[in-house]
Length: 201
Image 1 (cartoon, rainbow, N blue to C red):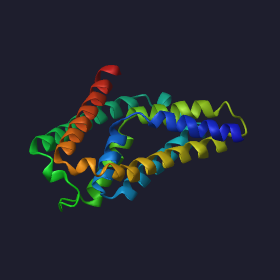
Image 2: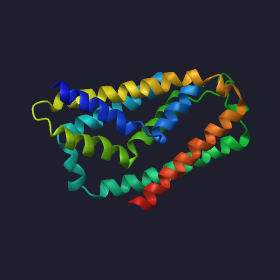
Image 3: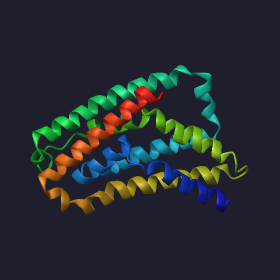
């Protein structure tokens, strides 16, 4: 059981460590200190649901309903292109408007909607959680629950560290130019992922 839990935790971390649309958004919200707890919780709970689905053996749904993957792929691509464009627009506007405490705080509904779309409209998250983690959990008969719980714990600990640890970079981002760079990096990341969805299949 302990081996299954350890592997589940470490594998979960390894899958979400790479910078992606979701991680970039969590980092940005952490730096702005806007609704960080809600964003972290939304990401962690979403991952837990998907991991549970994979460990429970529902990864075959994508095979039974093949059009779901394509619909989510193109829908996610469009959203990422639009969101990336907004980040480039913000960068062109200059970094001063992006400094924490400037009064331009996004609503909870807007932030939650964005993070949920970034999470659930990304086909890769299903490959990582439902398909990959689900299939690997099958290697631990009798301990799949421990594997799944540990994998969900890995996701929760990562997003918590990313969201709340981002404030340690606050001195760097006191410079408006740093925010401009961040917006460009986030925008480029969104567009890169969108192009990957479009041409990677």
